Length: 167
Image 1 (cartoon, rainbow, N blue to C red):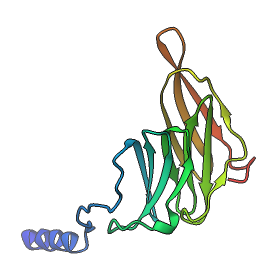
Image 2: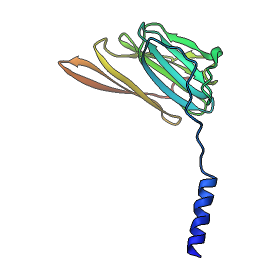
Image 3: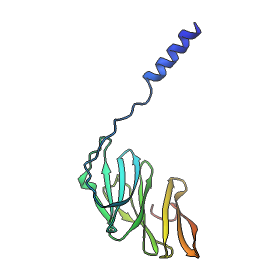
Image 4: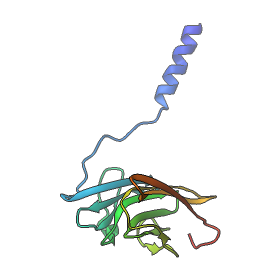
């Protein structure tokens, strides 16, 4: 009897388990990709690409890999270290431009983008990355590192507060 019960539990678990889409190849042709980042929410897969020429380009893909050409946009022409984060209703694209960390946000699935209300000052020295996470209650948490003193990288943190700004 115990084996029958266990069998039924396992069968029910497998029957109602999550199913995944198959791996897909996108129609994006990007021969000059330097860096990428990906975020997924109800509006699809949000891909941000840094090309070798410095362009930061945003793509929106559905779960089958089809690109929404109406949402493809160049967010910046001289950027580096792209990062994309968000929640169910907001998307934040952040990147380094010279001695600033800039960004844009969207509240409609990447259809329209608005520049952040302020840029974050940093040094123009060598950077080894920009990373971010978003929490709806606490805003965007941003971390980056630049080589400011000697051969070591200095790590910096800034929280973009959602209560003091439009995002």
